[in-house]
Image 1: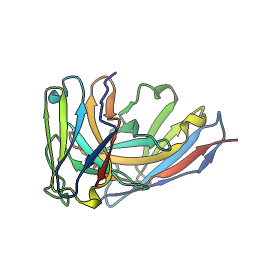
Image 2: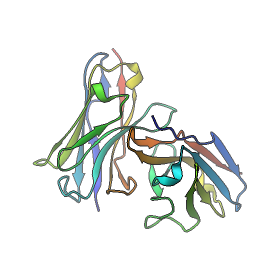
Image 3: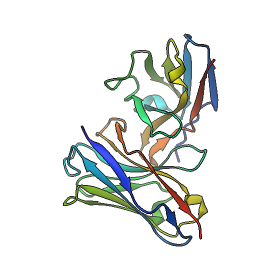
Image 4: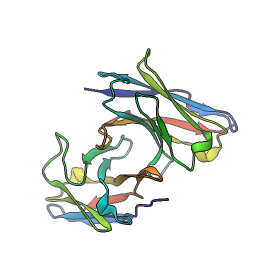
Length: 119
Length: 107
């Protein structure tokens, strides 16, 4: 059974780059079985999809965040990562990594990691 | 951009049926997935591709999708069903889109 675990700093300064990693266990990030996504949830608000990467390296991003987002995969470490540049307080949220099979729903999620943007 | 609209809240009496709607332009032509999220927890997939249940999800959860509205139905509601529920689709212009979310209260 595939499991996901997010890791990264819990506090980021304004204008800096937020960097998070999702470690995949019980499966391979390069298997082609899943699209690997990042989703965030600001305090008290709903879910917002940030972007995904497929094992081939192809990516798609939320148009509203596209200019600041990079998602990459490291097959040697069985991880995929998120970089969000020029952060502001509006980027404060719980960040989740998740996986969904082609044409399926996101059936595997990490536990989430809280990131606060503050000086 | 594609948008999905859900009611802010739905209340249901214990043992009765709750229906949560998800509105979007011609959503009936898309695959709709539904997630349950309890406080402090990650979302859990409860319905995928309109009406399919992942293993471990009770038969009390069902889904339908037609026209401009998709619906998640919770039959014989239990206290443990209290949660936020989100619909989600894939759209060619905005890729993955989540609905605005519905808080379900079991009375």
